[in-house]
Length: 250
Image (cartoon, rainbow, N blue to C red; front, side, top):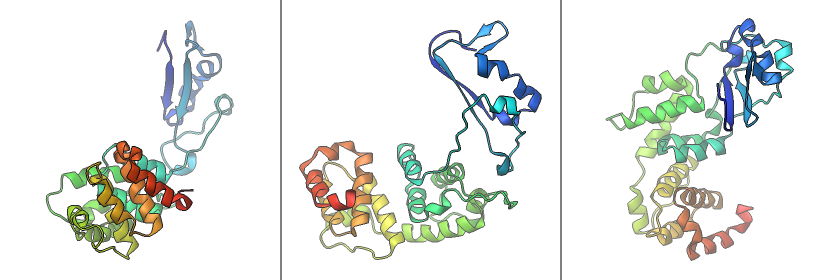
């Protein structure tokens, strides 16, 4: 237990503990002490756990302990997860698919007995698996073992679109004349690929292609490119694009 400094004392899966173990936290949570031990003033106490309705391993929190906390329910946010995915190098195939089918980022139904189902955690497993797959197309059952049969079927179908895309460098060789897909799934995939390739050296060509995209996909491409390479935000090309798309950005 800390005796100096500042920080967070994180009690993870608190309600997975039996009630008698949870009761041992009464004094710690309310009085910030355990017997002779006193938690320093610079420390905050946070606990986390699954809801009883999630059918995870939980015990009902004693009312006396529950009353010592402020309770917040967290929901999955697709945009926040995609920001995280970009920072932690989640595979572009997975990120593009989640953009295309955001409802499948988290599709857990506690009323069903599925062993595998889509969650942010399981999609990160798929991303890691994609890095170790030698063939272009993974086995459907392998992906289904992580995110469930329905999500895996859709993902593998999307993957065929993703794998059939032209090389991004070929698109940027002739941005004014290269094909612009009409299918939304293909547009999501193209934006994912191009945003990862954008640099100061090819920014003018990326912008030329972005101007030919439907406005919402143009914004998606350049916004993600800016997250990958912040330097492009300070260029004249970016400022001109932002001015031209101000109505969409707002």
